[in-house]
Image (cartoon, rainbow, N blue to C red; front, side):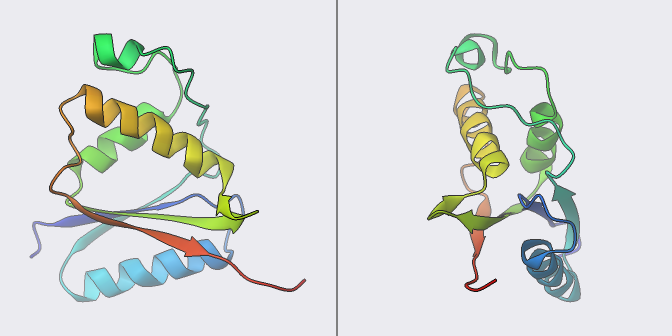
Length: 129
């Protein structure tokens, strides 16, 4: 199993918060099972929203020049993907939503590169102050 890599992406703006803690723990469990892991935090990265320009469909790359291309390359190289984000007002944090929209379109444009990959979401929510 050592040839397999799981990439965990944290969409939380908070360093060391619940989302990052849970994702890092999950990646440790993956490592204990013999998988390689990579942790990516969207915090500090420039992830802009999709412009719906459809350039990706024509040119097979996004027209927006930010950090999405790098994250996308790491996700394409991975065998498994975990997208972890806090829940804000019944939805995912904004940066993660922007990433999902953009890499989703890029995946379609490049031949559905995420098909047959193992993956899942990790939603982190809490109540109270």
